[in-house]
Length: 304
Image (cartoon, rainbow, N blue to C red; front, side, top):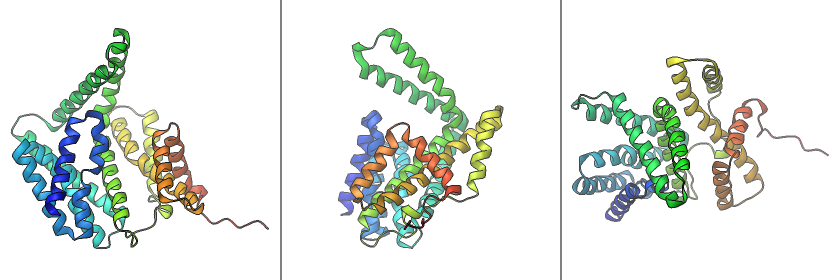
C-alpha cells in the first residue's frame, strides 16, 4: 500500500510538470494517495508514502524538485490526516496546514536565494516573468497558424499588462492557490471518511469569522482610493479574503441544495458550475458577504 501510494504520488507529480496548463487539475490530486493512506490506516503510513515519493523524486529529478514536492504536496499529505484524526475541525485543519506550508515555503525560499546573492523579491519576480513567457508560448502554440501576428501581439500585451498585477499580488495568489489545494484535499478525504465524516461544522453551516468583513471593507476602500505600498498591501488582503466569502457563499448554496435532497454528485457538479461560469463566482462571493447581515440560512417561519 505504501509503495503504491508513493508511486501514485510520484507519477502525479511528474505528470504535472509535463502538462502545462493541465497541471492545475493534476496538482489537486497529487497529495491524495499519501493522504488517503494516512486517513484510513494512520499517519505513519502516509508519512512513509511521502518519504518514498521524496526519495524517488530526489533520485530522478534532483534536490529542487524534491523540495518543491515536500513543500507543496508532502507536508499537506502528512499533516491533514494527522490533524483530522486528532479531532481538529476541517476548517482549522485547512488554515493550520496552509500556515505551516507557507512558513516552510518561506524557509526554503530564503535558503535557495541565500547563496546566490539574489533577493527573495528578485527571485519571485524572475519566476513570475518565466510563467508569463511560458503562458504566451503555450497560447501561441495552441492557436497555431490560425492566429494572426496582430492577435499574437495583442495577447502578448494583455499578458504583459497583467504582469504588473501578478508581481504585486504574487504572495496573495500563492496563499489562495495553496489554500485551495488544502481545501480540495480535505474535501476528497471527506468521501474517504464516510459514513463517519470529518470533524467540524457541516459545509452548510460554515461561516467565516465576522470581524474579517471589516478588513475586507477597509481593503476595498484602499484599493479604490490608495496608492503606493499601502495599495499593494490592500490588493493582497483583498485577494486572500474574497475566496473566504466565496466559500461562505458556497455554504449558503449548499444549505439550499441539501434542503432539496440533491445527491452529493449533483451538488458537486453545481459547485463546479458556480466556480467556472462567469459571473456566478462574483454572485456567490456577494452572497457570502451579505450573508453576514441577511443570514440567508436562518430558519424562516412557514406561512399558513
